[in-house]
Length: 221
Image (cartoon, rainbow, N blue to C red; front, side, top):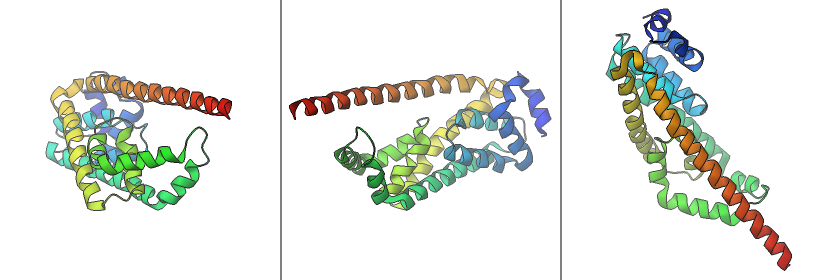
């Protein structure tokens, strides 16, 4: 199916501008592997929203451009490939460089990083698995997994499992909704903003507490 046909099939052609239009072009040129490539790039560049690409891939499958199982398999492969690249970046960066950078950041202490490492040691497997289903963290969680040298086989297994749940849910939503596939983005977008706001508020509160503690220490000194 040509990209122009997909554009005409959408309930609102203007919805397929930007990222959606780019994803359509990839799928039109490469078929189901194009959806996998788009998802791999989404892992490397989080601003590319899987919440748009995956439902659109499901919608495209519903139009008969390629098989549903085929596109699910390719998008899972793309997720794992993108996560693996970030894992390798974390592994190459390493703990020594991470500590070197951390020690030069304002308001933070080495003890904070040590506690974070200890937390990841206890909960790293859960973080990698569930992190694949949380916007923004879907990509970021792969880096600390690489820095901490989580066993590669374990990382790939957990990433594949978490990505399968996320990808299947969104691809099927687009497949079943058909021309209304873009409605998925609204729900997912709300969830993403909740996550972002929670993180921002948490960071702000941490900064306030750390500044207060630093001032109190200086007064006592």
